[in-house]
Image (cartoon, rainbow, N blue to C red; front, side, top):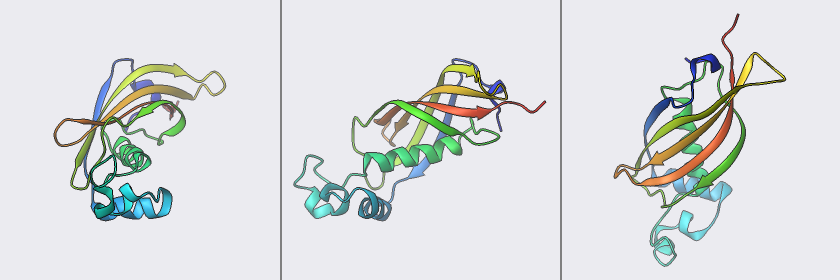
Length: 147
């Protein structure tokens, strides 16, 4: 477990793997993003995606799961402070095996709460073919090491 004090700019971390299941894609879509290309493999064939694709927001959730379980796991958990940039250059598909690579771009102690710090982190999510399925730059609040 890491504290804010354990991170420096340029640090790199990895997480995963995580298998993407068709049933999870459909279940997520039914509840949060009910579009044909996320719900029905047959209907998805006639869309821009040419097959079933996970919602980008589902991919973001899976990425967060890998961040939490990564070798950069925070001792007190991470609290998202905001996302500066997110993109999905290719769809996440059933059967994909995802992994992440993270890089600390900035680390600054909180001015209001010196027992915490903000990490600006770039996280890239890859599939089993090393193709990028998501890029994200986010700000994460991390606890400082107890005195």
